[in-house]
Length: 151
Image 1 (cartoon, one colour):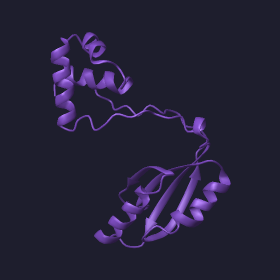
Image 2: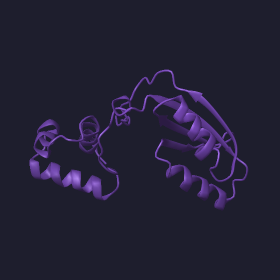
Image 3: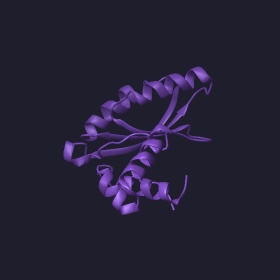
């Protein structure tokens, strides 16, 4: 990956809907060379996929919590079962496996506190292997741009 690839990636992170023509112009490549590089970045897995970033508030998901999960056992079967079940919950919008205690951090969005309590007491508490849940409420999201530092 060279500096042009990084510039292409940085531009696409800022605007995934940019046309290849505009992208080529911004990075100083011909249309065909730019298109070839983007296709190679996609095929090699550097670009995983494209998506729209939707405002949670605009779709009624105004309550956000971070849930720390400790599981009772970390054998491969329990870990796999927990991860599959957590990933299947639509209100869990981000999940990270951590070193140490706790084992996982989940970012959860719901419409309100009541919906969160129902999710917490039901689906989250019922995830495979859960020993303990601890949560904290998000007061303010500082940055919603999921870009990587490519410089």
